[in-house]
Length: 394
Image (tube, rainbow, N blue to C red; front, side):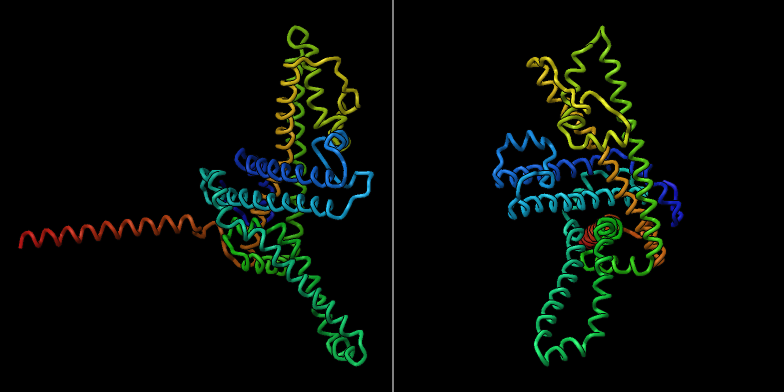
């Protein structure tokens, strides 16, 4: 890979660096795992709310959501649904950490750093990616609780002088700090995986770097994030359109009258209806973005018949189309993770004049320690052999 310029020009590499099978694969696994937990907990929330599985399936299919339910939702169903979303966010952050680590190793010239190696890195440093933002959120919660307690005490006579009048300026300063910390919390949610994946920081250092980055490089942070977002959306649109063209080309070949003819359309329309059709809430969005309309998207999926083998094939194609569709989202998330890694390496150079690419990471230090231990052991063995030879000669 070419050396970095350490400016906005490096951000434009994001789509190309993100177009990597192992990076997309990591986010694909993260999406699959996150969606599975979200799917189970969302169905559980609706079941607890009094709906049957068949009712939920007929209404939501593969994309359950409590926001489009025309029934009162009890609070504990909302809680279960919220846990599903939160777990999905945590899994995304861990997947983003893995992609950031792969990107960092690639920037250092290690093209053979695998997704398996990145998963091992998650086991070692994954908690910091989650606890960093959580720690900042706890800082905000702490000051809010202190404010509530102070306000409750200040409502009493005389105490209002001590707990409101005298420390008012202090309260104002704290309020500014809390507002700033809220902005830092958003930054930490975005940058924490990149900070840990590139600089190998722990929880406390991740918190410090989140504050430091926003304070030292606010405008570059905003501009670079905008560039990452625009580049990611454009690249993902192109990637998705290539998938659509490939899908249509495949159907064109297999659907010839002297090949599969109408059998292909019966199977593919039924299979795609669960992802892009009458059974998917994504249909309006996809239709508007790509300006495509199929019988499935128009609600005309009523095959005359499906044999047993057709049904089995339909299930298999549904799974395959689901993976292909999710790969488009995975590529979008990969652009995000790669962009954050490049962005943080640049901003670290700008604010601290530290080149993270040239810095030896923990793997390189471990290799050096192992080589030194091996060398010391060999020297020790040679010394022992020389002593033995001298004793034998003596």
